[in-house]
Image 1 (cartoon, rainbow, N blue to C red):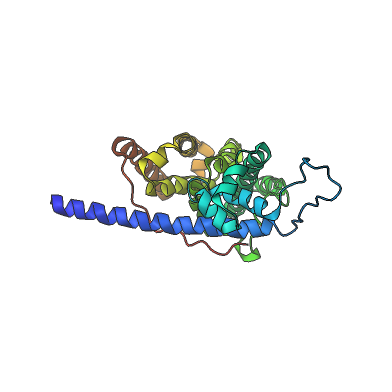
Image 2: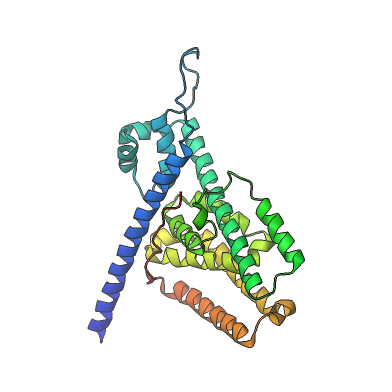
Length: 296
């Protein structure tokens, strides 16, 4: 029996390793596409007429390096980033000593995080609206409120997806799978979005948060510990949301007995899973990562 258990553990470990590598490839491709989108209107700064020593902005190679730094150090090292943008590891090391370069990296991480958070929120609003319509639960007031939430997400603050993918739940899952491969600061805007009441009550966003915690299961314990604060916030959010649903009499009226039972069973499994994770701290097994569609 111990040999079989050891063999199964090895298989699970290998599957997790393969899944992690595929998600890593997805994350790199995403940043490649995003970088090219962000660089469309880029113009090289002109030195002529600017006093020597004064800043003139970032050149194309340096600007691309800033975008690729969203993947450092979790996914790419400095040598790999240098090869991708056309410079050396040493040059990037020098750039990292410059405050304007570091500040721009911090700003870019924030921009990417906001765009991902806004995109997920936009998808969730549309998904929630469709679900409510399907079950004839969407009131005029709810519809107007959802539209206001949708209108509040300004153009340019979210990822410009292909028209046929704008409402895609699968795209949301794909984006969630990428988060652990970015610098942790990219995830902070999404955590801030969880403070919104609408987000806390969104079934779709709840699914996204659960997927994020599943995504972390393919990483080793050291890497996962770096995400403890983030995952703690997500776990609290999911628990609060589930409790609110189960204790809200108005919500219960709109659910069948089977739906309530399924939600209770889900809550039980979710809590057991979190307790097991705290006790065992082993690399978990998860389904194969959602293939990343071409979204730009």
